[in-house]
Image (cartoon, rainbow, N blue to C red):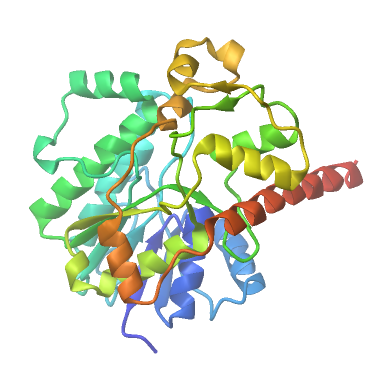
Length: 353
């Protein structure tokens, strides 16, 4: 049995459950902080159906409480060596207060809790490829900056930017060793394409499948990178035991992801559906009214030609035998899963009538 003991926040989400499965496969003792016993039972059922090596221990968490309603002196946490925080709200259209509470306040509370654990050697925080690398020296944000950033970026992305800075600042001030992981769009696992995440790029894929995508967004340089859920889980399970990852940030994404229009054309051909011939540059999309584009304005900032500093993550991963699966194959499997899952849900609804 490994001497590692991981505490996972956000374990019941798309990323969290693949992470828990990976940690269990590596022989790590896992405790999951969940909001309800029902959510824990759903997670345990999912893990049993996915050949996990064991079952985690549950701890009930209340993110609205300053101390998370968790006792750091409890025997449950005495030997915790690493915390993985993948909790938070991924949603567009949130108001600023809700986004701040879900993505900033709760993340800072996790850092404060981590500082109380006697055996802790690493806090791993899930940030994002568009928001990572913030300067902790600029914390705290004043109300005017918060209002301006949340308005400019949207409440979701603005809160993630602030959270990235706040987590680093809090960890540095309290002496908590940390690693920031900045993933791209997390698609399904590389084997079956399984995913429970239906926002962002998944919405575009399903709109394409249903013939509701009027045009291909962006141009041949528009880069919306992806990473498979199982690769990300394996990377996150690796970093707590690597000394070079302490107080470092890693951008985890597949640089071989095709440009967005090419990606959608490929998936349209694979799904045997009509692909729009028209391409609309992202700059024009951002100026058009949402009623015309059908796109949430918050999603349009992701239509970028930017590239990201992936070399450190790639070097660390490849040094330990971790390599990205073929991205086009993974994308096709993911699209197949999304379509099949929607069909299965439709059949289930009809059967229950």
